[in-house]
Length: 296
Image (cartoon, rainbow, N blue to C red; front, side, top):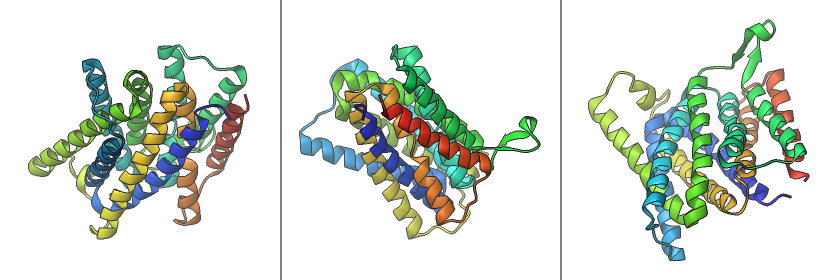
């Protein structure tokens, strides 16, 4: 197994479970509140880990600035993603966002000059097509191709931001190590989200119902789901960050995008959501692509 693939898959397992918890919490408590709780929970854990390991914040101004910028960018990604989970079907939203893995591969090659073996390139392409197919439906042939269900627009924003964060974080992590960069990015992430929550709650601008409203009464179950989403997310991000420190960006980013398999299984087997033929084909493509990436 190529170095970094295992860390990417651990991140995928955690993040697929995060998707499930995020969907439960967002539909009961509103996406903005759930993201705020989740990111605060993850920040507390990141600080505790840093204290336990005796790690301090980096002193390099460029590392601090880059970590903070990408942390704020990640805040936008999480908010878009959790909003998509609130208004769209889990079996569709999660795989669509997972297309960030394919975009990460492209950006890593173009911006960072990383290289792929031929079989790995084929595997990356097949896996990317797989995650795309899980989010589309064909009505009347290719001309009738469309994304399945609501929330796709937010999903597209999230996948773009996640890909940019994945590639961008690799540089400061390479300089200062994963934990100091993670700490700064999570501080910026949680601070940004809570600032947005305060403004939206006080001002209530037009369109704020998309972020604050929920389709079910608020409950402790929703709050607990939000907290658990934060715990799973930070565990996944720790595995992801360690992978970025040890392996090429493209393989960690691609492997970490297979979390939707977990989300789709829950959505279909437990929640009763139904997959169309194209989505089953997409899941098969994800599996084949993963095998191709892992073989060299």
